[in-house]
Image (cartoon, helix red, strand yellow):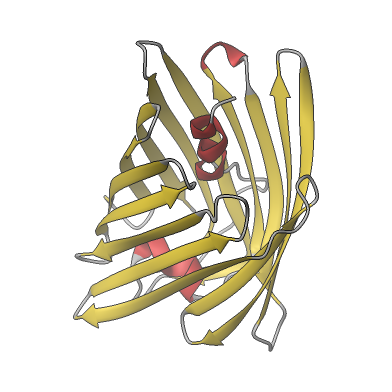
Length: 244
């Protein structure tokens, strides 16, 4: 399975729980679907699709936040799951997990299980994440993967208001592996409903560049478009979601 398929598994999430009633200006769950086309150098292409969602243990307040960042800014804890398949079902990936904060602390914990099915077999991986929220809206984490063991790694995410209803999201990660891989990206929100973003994933000898635009038509319905230019392939995709 190529790197684009593996990266794609992180963007589709499937809700585990039925909708609950929440107050105006908040939500407690999300269902979404993603479609993408990967154009591989040499002329071949494949389609990917995914379904997914999240369920939070308490309603997430959206007032005063960029809608795309509300769960992060509210320190929301919950569970998530996803299913992704490439064209023809030759490769599929299933993920379930949970993440959140220890009450009355700055400690963040997360765990994920991922199963990838191939034509001739499958692989199963567990990962565990721990982190701290050192200052308001800044989270630092590190992750252990039972398949590859632990290479020193750190991820950071920071969201800040800059003027009026505008805000920025800045994030990045570094892994002290053979390639010293890193990710660096950011999103700029013109309004709480609309934003654009860019990201670079560097693997040492190759790099992928991703551009995205997102818009909430209401507080419940959104659409996100993205394009990734890679060393060996280009990916176009759309993700739509409904919050409840």
